[in-house]
Amino acid sequence: MAEKKPIKITETILRDAHQSLIATRMPTDMMLPIIEKMDKVGYNSVECWGGATFDASLRFLKEDPWERLRKLREGFKNTKLQMLFRGQNILGYRPYADDVVYAFVEKSIANGMDVIRIFDCLNDLRNLQAAVDATNKIKVQEGRGESQIALSYTLGDAYTLDYWAKMAKDIEEMGADSICIKDMAGLLTPYKAEELVKTLKSNTKLPIQLHTHYTSGVASMTYLKAVEAGVDIIDCAMSPFALGTSQPATEVMVETFKGTEYDTGFDQNLLAEIADYFRPYREECIASGLLNPKVLGVNIKTLLYQVPGGMLSNMVSQLKEQGAEDKYQEVLEEIPRVRKDCGEPPLVTPSSQIVGTQAIFNVLMGERYKMATGEFKDLLRGNYGQTVKPMDQAVIDKVIPNEPRSTARSAEATGHTEPELESIENEMKQWKQQEEDVLSYALFPQVATDFFKYRMAQQEKVDLSVADTKNGAYPV
Ligand SMILES: [Mn+2]
Image 1 (cartoon, rainbow, N blue to C red):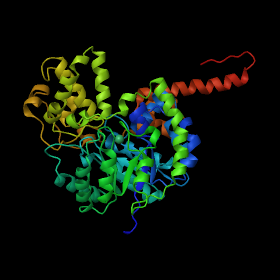
Image 2: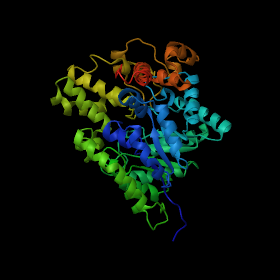
Image 3: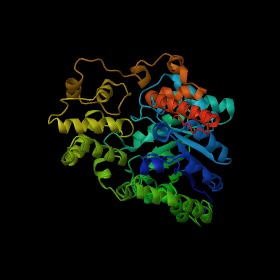
């Protein structure tokens, strides 16, 4: 047998799997009882944090995401924790000044994070440099923390093998520890993956991780070819929350490589125990409607229109609100045209929403760009950074006539060049109970404030109920 080269696995059930299938609603209490077992599997890392998990924790679950991170860190004694980070936008929706990026990275690692996967929706690497530098700085200081830069994978004239090869070289030069091919829409087919991985491997010494979604039905074959081509790490989800718009199943990939040079050595019995734990929760989510069986099938439209699964469901609900469900097909066809007009960016948060919403406007108004969203205008102004292809001049002239356009990185294009953490802290002082609260507020001002109010009410309730249990006074 050939030399052993066990394929490494990042488990996504605590982040992307439930984000993709049940709108990121898995509460911390659901996670904690099983993490001791998960810690014994031998995962390369467990992905457990990101923009949506952070937002949904505060907004819907009324949980402090920092508290979740600390509890997971406590339980995962041997396994690295991993998060997803939106470059200069951190976990939010606007670019932040560098001091906020540095503070967020520092607090993430201090609270237990290990691997920070950083991406930019335009693949403008300048928007990733501050986060990489921040991670490297903490790594030197603390001996912990790894930066991984993700290529937002997409299709289009500009996205040649040479383009990806150059990006890989640039990423290595930026000082990242590894590279991720982030295929958020499940566009990467098996033989394309083989080609891409081989190309990246011959252009960089950095480890390559592959992240995809099962949306178009090819994902496990894509992993097979990518592994044979030399990819180092694959992202998988435990079977109860795998497939559909989520990742390939961990157990299936483990079994696939058993007895080969890529054998993970994972214990299938242990994996079965973990799956047994999550399965009743899956059933519960199906029964309550939180998990819609529709997202579990194969959606080949994702390949035809290059639209990520999450974007499709967003679009359907936006059209429903407008009473315009019959325009679905028309909007679907408009999306690639809008994408071309604005420089053919990858479709991933936030560019996916920006392009999707503009496509809806174009169709519903009966005239293209008769109205444009603020975000679409910002994209044309260069406020998100540079796209790989030039934008359409006629569209620019119609949407933002005679306006200046920036060619700087996003933080500079939007004027976030001076430190802003202090002024943010001043705004929210009254709610601050820990340093991390300032960062929660920076990312989601309204949602965090609502959470802080809720937290305060809870704390007061606890005090009062202890003091006054006899009368059953429970102010909320
Ligand atoms: Mn994903």
